[in-house]
Image (cartoon, rainbow, N blue to C red; front, top):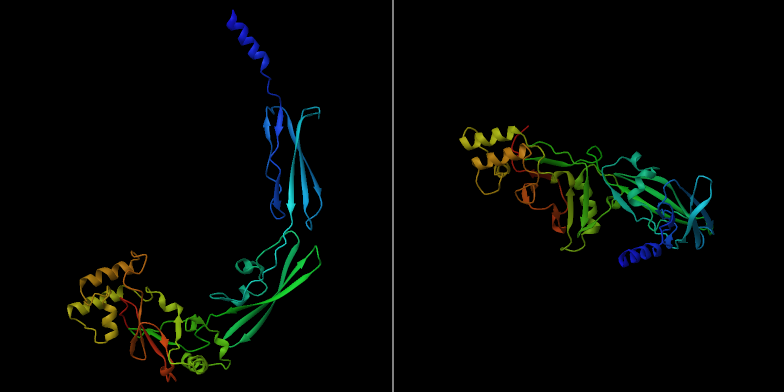
Length: 348
C-alpha cells in the first residue's frame, strides 16, 4: 500500500509537456550572410501551424537587427506558443582591393572583353554585397604580337556615395605561329606547333611588348630583348615553349616499327637525336625493353611520364637541358630547336 501511494504522488508532481517552441539562439552576423534557414524546435506540434514574422530594424549602412517571431497557432488562429530570435547584423567596412594585373593563356579576345563571367577568378577582394556594386569597362590595346585588355573598375558605395576607380591590365600571351616564326621540330624533322611562349629574365616573367617593333622570327625578338635585359654575364634569359613540354606529342605505332627495324639491323638510326629518342627508358641501350616501354606510352598505360623530366633539347645543333641564354650567346643568327621526345623517331 505504501509503494502505491508514493507512485501516485510522483505522477501527480510531474508536469505534462505542453505544446511549445524553442527558438534558435540570438547571434551576430555579417550583412552578406543569409538570414533565413534557422527554424525553432517544435515540441508536440501536431495539428498546429508554424507562422514566421520578420521585422527589419535599421539598414545595411549601420548596425541593424532582424527580429524574427515564430508562433504556433491552432485551427482557430489562436497562438499556442511563441518565441523571438534576434540577429544583430554588422555591416562590412573592408577596404576595396582591386585585382592585380594578370596574364592569361589559351583564350580568345572575345572570351575576355566585356565578359563578366570571366572575372570570376580575378574579381575585387573584400567584396561587400550589402552596399558596394562593382562595374567595369574594357579597352583593347593591340601591341604586336600581343593583346592587352585594360579593365577599368569602379566600386560604388551606396551608403556613402563614394566611387573608387582602378585599372587592371589583362595580358593575352598566346602567340600563334602565324604571328611570329618559330623553328621547332622533333628528331624526325616533323615541325612542332608552338602556341604559347614565355620569356624570363633571371626567373622573372618579362612582358614581350618590351620590344615594340614587330619581329618576324623568335630569334630577332630575343636579340632585341637581350640588348637591354642582359647587362651582366651572369644574367640569364629563359625561353619556355609551353607546348613542347608534353612528352606524348607525336608518339605512334610507326615509332615502334622504326625502333624494331633499328634493333634488327634492317634500318639503323644514324642521327644522334634519333638514337637518343629510341632509348625510350634512357638506360643507354636500345633493345626490346624500349619497345615494351614505348608500347605502354602509346597505349596510354602510363598516366605520368616515367623517364626523367621530359624532353631533351638541341639548340642550333648543341644539346641543352634548358632553353637558357646568356650575354655571350647573342646576337643569334638563327634559332633552330630540336625536341627529343623519347620514342618519337619517325620522319616525315
